[in-house]
Length: 322
Image (cartoon, rainbow, N blue to C red; front, top):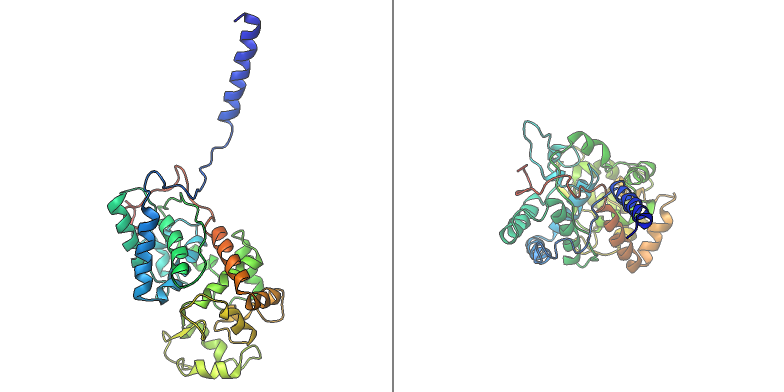
């Protein structure tokens, strides 16, 4: 090679190296993330979740909610699973979670099974995400492809849990902005709210609504709910979020809203003469559209600010830092 061609080639090679070194390298989530490192991870987790739901069908709703409450605080990083320590203010004791969030032991059980076959490989954050999908499928709801590769946080934030999770008395603009702050649209929000086709709520969270004598609640429905939720006692008494089919994943939640039978104020506000009425109406008429939109919204929610690459850790047990 003569010098005339040598130097341009060297310069070109250096330019390529400089370009590569300045290109941001971000680890991407992938549906095949564990294909080589733990090929039986997804099957193992699914089996564990199905067993938990078969023992208690209510757990399906609890696991979906746990995923939501994780992702809305610091992103999908399993921070909700961390116990209190001198250096960690646990999210478990934040108002939206305290004596309310459930399923921690189900995630730990799935983690133990995975640790037996692939120690130190699968994150708790990925297990929560898969658990929500598998719980939905176990009660007749949709399934979806979960991209994996999240890592676990070494911190938690009780204060963010208290501010970033929308409450049961939230108005529509608060709900839309709360979800919008996480990159989710109003349609995503209405679809994700459909998870309330499952699960139960405590009396103190819906008492104001059923005793309000407001125009946005069916009188017979309010009367029925008051029987198990006295005006000044029974705070922890439970009522199904969907009175019709509380253990099946369907679109009855939206049909209830159209009859003014939403249990929580934050449910009924989705059908109250405002911008989301048309979406509720559409989902009430077309269950397949709801199921499809729910799965797509869960995919989006599961990808809120994940820790990937060299960020975060893989916890050996989900409730503590290694």
